[in-house]
Length: 152
Image 1: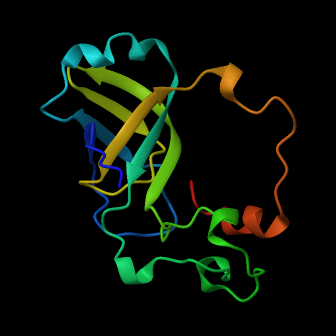
Image 2: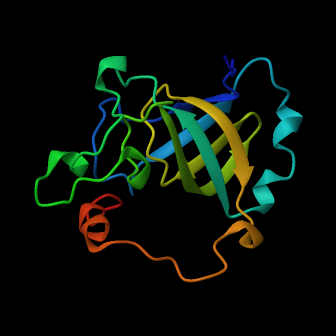
């Protein structure tokens, strides 16, 4: 058993779980009460952050353990949950690289975070070039099609 305490919570206008149109969503990530404001010191020097969060709105009975068509679209091949980025994951964890717009005390303003209002944040890390892929990123055509409206 692993017990993890959220470090922050997401605040934004998205309250429904939807698959597309996340690009214009601006979010505030506010530290949980048990953390000091100083835990964010220096983060504003980075342009992007990685946000690890918990899909708390996903119902346990909707967790996927086997291969399926992404978004239940039969035009896409059946692939395992670990070969896609769907929210119905066994441990309900999501991770996104978000643009850091600014910091105000205990809160970070970001764009490009695909987490709904109230989502618990598990961790926040600065994006450093040295941790990005050092070779070409390869992905199948179905995933490019699936993501075509995601950030619009």
